[in-house]
Length: 293
Image 1 (tube, rainbow, N blue to C red):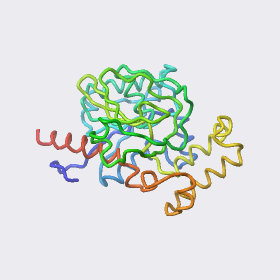
Image 2: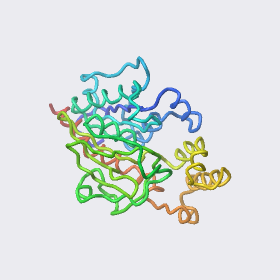
Image 3: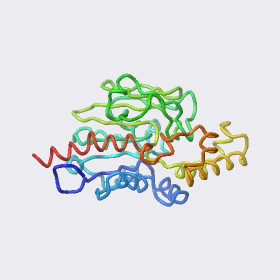
């Protein structure tokens, strides 16, 4: 693992979904969002220990500050919840994120995860007035700060990534560095700082292989039709079938060209660039420093 400590890295994956939402995901994809996320992380660094936390559930056993500090890094998944509805399944997660900041443990979030990171630090999230970003976030462009930031190291000046979200950060926290944006969302990647802790996050889903996008959207074909992404259900299913075929064979140049996708999405190593960069730049040094102490 190229760190000073002989012990394996220990990570916490925080699942932002309710029990019903997790089981719906399992029915379509075979695993819950947090299980799938943990699998992607273990593929980057085999042998790491990944625990799962379920703060959306009433009565969930959530780690306190000392428990959070025992982890080398914390990852927050996406969620089908809406942060501005203020229900207990949401407020528990905001409070947990505040405790994560206070613990000083390196934290990273995708989609819902960056929204939780923003709100816990004083930012605002709302339904995107430009509508839903679905399937892929197109032409994500790093800011000047983003081009220098280790989170986006290795990404080109413009790239696409898997994405499914309606809500977006409309007012970042006071102590924020915006690292990337696109035409749909002014905050596609950012770093937030609060209570001595820092958070790196992205609005898109580097952890999603194409087959996971297909599994999620196969349960939402009505949205694809109702919001004019596809003309009818048959067209929606045909589109998803082509994405599934491209997942099965990323070398299908005809499908890659037809859907405007390149190695930033199709290469399983390049797709997870942000996860790998966070592990290398934040988690490993944090674990090494703690082992020396």
